[in-house]
Length: 182
Image (cartoon, rainbow, N blue to C red; front, side, top):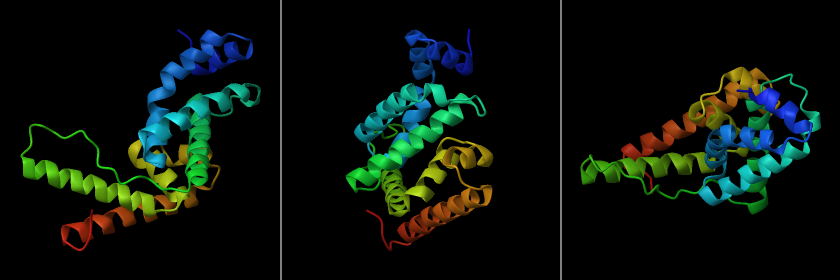
């Protein structure tokens, strides 16, 4: 089985199937990044599709200096941020429709409210801070990989993540004190 870099090399040579395999392997993580930045499944789908179109067009520019996943994260992040800017809407505060059936109704409602509070806090962030937060706290990327993906310094990554985490914590504290929420 080929790794992603070898598949991209084959795709550069015209092997569409190799590129399709890269798509299959990376779709889930890119959708998660796009969903975190865009806030809506439909927007995330659009962003991921555009990510793969851009990646296909940029195959010749991938030099292998970074991992394929890092290169794709960068494209997905930039594409998602562009989509949000174009649509001039932040992350939706829509409450997910996935509730844990094993919890009490009160616990389910409270959990859904807290999710909505977090989503709204993320929507209120700058797009740059939101992207850094999603890449770190949702996707689990290392700070160095985030810096490379966003083409910013390590200290800028840490600062953006700190601000995002603080905003989420403040929003949850206000919600818990009954001062806000949805």
